[in-house]
Image 1 (cartoon, helix red, strand yellow):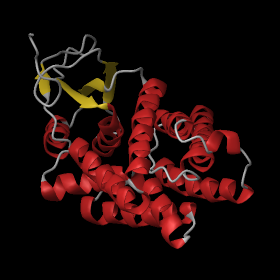
Image 2 (image 1 turned 135 degrees about the horizontal axis):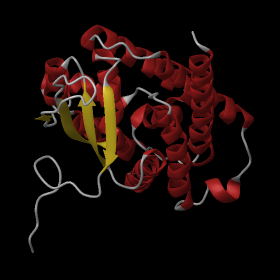
Image 3 (image 1 turned 120 degrees about the horizontal axis):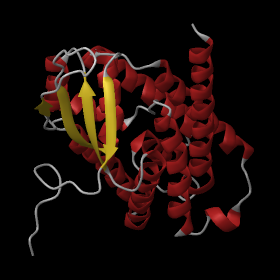
Amino acid sequence: MSFQKLKRGFKDYLFITLGSLITALGLDFFLIPNKIVAGGVSGLATILFYLFHLPVGLQMLAYNVILFTLAFKLLGVHFGLKSIYTSVILSIFVDMVMALNPPIPDLSKDPLLAPIYGGIITGIGMGVVFWRGASTGGTDIIAMIMNKYLGITSGSGLLISDSLITLFAVFAFGPIKAMYGILAIITTSKTIDTILEGIESTRSVLIITEKLDEMKNMILKELGRGATIISAMGAYSGIERPILMSVVRRRELAILRRRIYDIDPKAFIIIHSNSEVIGEGFKKLDIK
């Protein structure tokens, strides 16, 4: 391994560790103490923590082990070491920070500030993790399984799984806490968008690959997104090399990146932020 690759790998894991710690601080300082469920395995773990006193971090680790195993068995997806490392270190940080029991009552007990600042802090942490090419697993994997076996798009799968967890919170903590959870989800999502590539939630992806058909089928069938093949020719080689273009939502981008790497690690990828996307699967054209 070259020195540059070793240096880049060290920086990746350093930022992933920092992002995981920031995420844990947001959960332990603001969301968990206030019974705010912001979807995902952390939300489910928060509910069961108050119902059965099970450690949140340990639950998160157990759920991710099950989900990663299902992904290997049912999807044949091989997740990178970064994502596995993230799920483990985040679980450790959550229980470690909770054990220290940091005293911040003036901040964490405010019913409105808790979901806002909790969402911002966890969003910053998760944004850093995504930025370095890792994923926390969780409901992303559930969405991929639902896509393959039920034909549900990844975006819809994420919405369904997070909505079910939020519905569970209604019965566990009442509707007010669930509404605060929705506020935290929105805040977290927008913060991740800002950390990654700006405030917009859609991305245009241009892919140059030698495995065009396999890449096209992955986008059409697994993500449930459309794709366009653009004729192009390499300026230096003079060889025709079609470009595959697709538009995806930010939460689908992490899944797309992983699947592109699975299919063709040497693929050339360009990702653009969009100011607005109008058409099927996104916004409807409104001429009023």
